Length: 242
Ligand SMILES: Cc1cc2nc3c(=O)[nH]c(=O)nc-3n(C[C@H](O)[C@H](O)[C@H](O)COP(=O)(O)O)c2cc1C
Image (cartoon, rainbow, N blue to C red; front, side, top):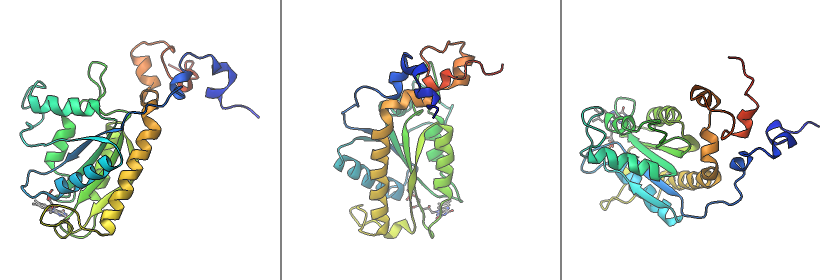
């Protein structure tokens, strides 16, 4: 039987095959950036993110929650603005994200979207989101809906992130948190635990190969780069028609 081309002997000596199967897995705690989409004093999207943060830390992860307060509107300030720098730096540091937006008028909030709009897909060879994992969540005042998580999934795809299958949508969020801001026990809480576990699993599985996963034939071609330094699978495509 034919071998899978990328793994066949023709590629065994390929200098980048090691990128697919790194000799050693990273052992440091996985790093997550958590974003929410509201400036309200008692914000349920922030409270859900804080609950997610506790769970991630419980699983041994390192986390940063970004506070969107004070972030200018996209293009209304220089990228040197301290809140923009903080956001970009945190995303670069991260190996995975968790996003939670309120649903407003059937979609995500502008506050949430502004944060993503400040993150360049690629700037000067730096890719703050590409290749990272992403879990998406939303809070609703009404019954359970999936409009915001669906929008976040599209946004995650656009930022070339690995959006995990599970997700959380909390209906009537105002009933799900106590006075201290902790999430009450419920099927919504259990679902959040599922999402967090899955996010950690996908991150551990993919982080060592993130650079390999984001390597694209069309971008190498555009940059005039040769096959070397590219992923082995893509090396089969050097003769693709112009
Ligand atoms: C202008 C506006 C539009 C809203 N639209 C929706 C909606 O389409 N669906 C929904 O379930 N809740 C809707 N809500 C309720 C918010 O989702 C809810 O208050 C949520 O908790 C806000 O997030 P936060 O607590 O993080 O601020 C809307 C609220 C406002 C102010």
